[in-house]
Image (tube, rainbow, N blue to C red):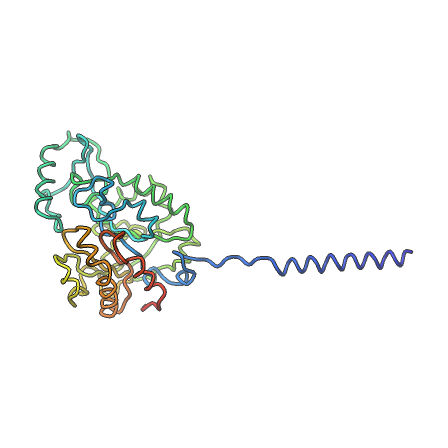
Length: 337
């Protein structure tokens, strides 16, 4: 009996060991990391990936903007698949249900792409509101040239972006800010929104991080400034980070010319290539005209001319465009650098 019992015990132990080993071999593998919806993008740097981008992202009818550039709010754009944002930041004062723009120098001197009638309207409202008493605290707003023509507070908008990133842990966003707010004010806005820890640090001339590295480090937001310089996490865009095409096109045929791909601001060879693709002044009809076949053709032409796929493919009225499919085609191809 002892011998038979010992044999039975050995058999039971053997069966348990075999079953355990079988279970160990069929344990599910960890899912492959995906970045912005594709596993292959995780191994590419920021400059090798294309981002569907909106021009004057904050300017939508839902937020009360005159002469809007987009049909959807930034929150809706994120849900639509937009991952790049061009925004303008100003200091302003809320007055009489509108926002008075705080500007240095002649009012309106920075408005280069608005119809004269809108500039005149903004000037009239600005003068009617009148400057607030000295010492009145300013607030950071997202406006296009004149907060009198439409404004959303910067911090609540950044909170929407933080909530999106919190809910989409493998997505990376890029933002270029035309800044009329000092860099410390921009940084304070990101800190107030709980986004400062998401800002990726980059250095001019140094290799950009891969999307996978950004996802793993949870620094999934690249922000650059057109005017100021806030250091590695808020760098100046045009001093070695971003190169771009021209951005003032008065008719659709202007976008078909070779000169539309010519260098504009930025340093040649900068890793982020911003392709500006819109017609001034913006209307949904004009955007629809240039946002389909013309967009795809120009992307291909400019990529060849510049030796670099566009990183930021920026359009007006993105919801009436082929920008998502164009960017997807770029991200399924072989990067040029």
